[in-house]
Length: 456
Image (cartoon, rainbow, N blue to C red; front, side, top):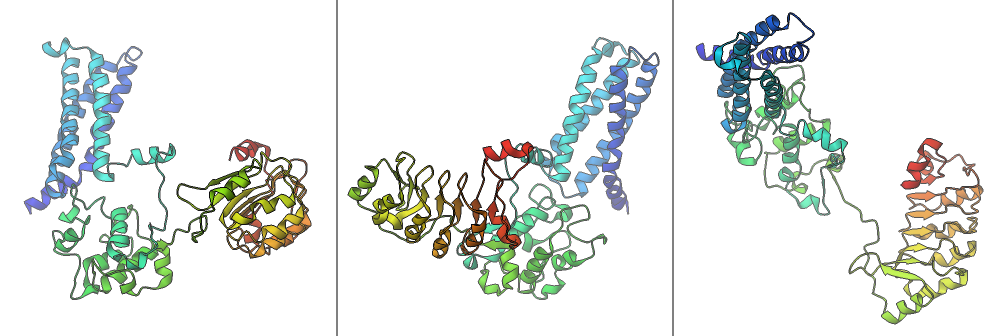
């Protein structure tokens, strides 16, 4: 019974700790305005006397919480020492206020500045214990774009079905939702969940996984309890498991909680798996094409046409005709021998016409086509409908006819068409699907966003 009383006192620590914090903050505010407040000295004596008393109570309750809360000493020691230092400073300032001989010699600013710094430090370290070491720095990093929060899917794998389900998905879910309170430094209920060995070992009440009767596993039961129940996990106020995460963890437990079985071996519903996994599709084609010989490339370059590999050791090329201002439809034949290698083709500012589409349709690996600042109307643009790799077309500042947006619908593999026009407002006259409307970018933005869009 006495042990339970100590546990109860320890659990009051989060409440008690706010008393000295309040007293000290109030005291600092009064001290900063003490020249204007005639009664400040008497008030400060009262405040820092009780700041000391409640500070001692906070230290005692905090120590009891450490003893019974599953915390490691190295996790709490800095917070504990900062708390002691806070009490010492509060008590010392009280002694100065009542004019004890030694403390009278110390400047008041020492206590004001010291209390402010130590209080912030103790509070921050306490927050690290209860909310995790990045509870304060994580949102700051996100705001400053130092790091980005990764959204679902959790992982990208080409061979995800061969990966162990536990290490690929289950453990990342636990890391995100459970490990904050169940790790090597803090183990609520003496339970650690940061690796498979600790999961099997369990906590104060034994293993949370029942291999013989899976549905009786404590882990399974807890995640299915209503959120308002005390034993529901994660606890109320914590980051909850999504419906898909609950389903996946439940299936993993019911199927024996194997740490080695692959995703495929679990025979899970395909829709559930797709929530967590996707194949990261490359932007450019992955087919193998032969590298053109040097002589062929030099013939193209002889016309001041830029042709370079898209990346090191790649056989695919990016082509730009900007330096060949007289480039016409017929000049496309210069590149016919390397057309399978061209994935990015920029014909902007050239003298091409809509007839060029009849030849471009043979550029089977073409992925990006730029026709900006040309006389293209879009008359024959549907000739490109068989190009399965074509994802983006740039038709900025062209003579593109809005009626020809109907032909763009036939290009089923397109992801984006850029149709900004500086001298006119171009809009499709068609009633098309919402998906297709999202593909067409007319650039009709408000003035406030114009600068941003140009930069992007």
